[in-house]
Image (cartoon, rainbow, N blue to C red; front, side):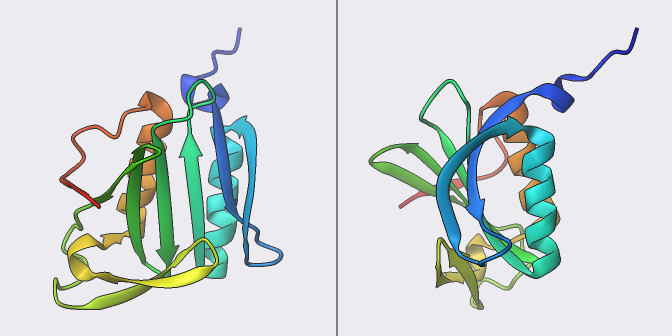
Amino acid sequence: MICVGKRDWMSVVWAATSPESGLFDPVERRSEVKDLSDRFNDLRSRGQGYVEVRSPDREFPVLILAFRDDHAVVHLMSDTERMSLLVGDGTVPSGAEVELPIMDDLAVFMGDFVLDIDRAWDLVHDFTQTWAAGPAGEWCEL
């Protein structure tokens, strides 16, 4: 008998930048976490991307990852009217500015909210296992 870990078969709903066009494709997909990881890795090899992730059972919360090179920001949409931004991990000085893709446009974020891409992806992956943003750090409501 082969045992498959929860991580390998758990289903997620996500939308992301298209690797082919480089534009955000808002059509949600339901797949295994592995397919989401594959898309993230594909986008990372291209240098940037934007990903929205949620549980297949609920519309909210939605975790949003925007990244370019080694920098990322993570947003949490709690409902249609509440969005928060995760405080950064010190990867970028607080006074510095970083441009990251939000859907199809570049947006400027202060270093206070920028994370290392690996840490940001770990937070997204953990979210797909628990569906809770958890005590990963401070969230600033926008």
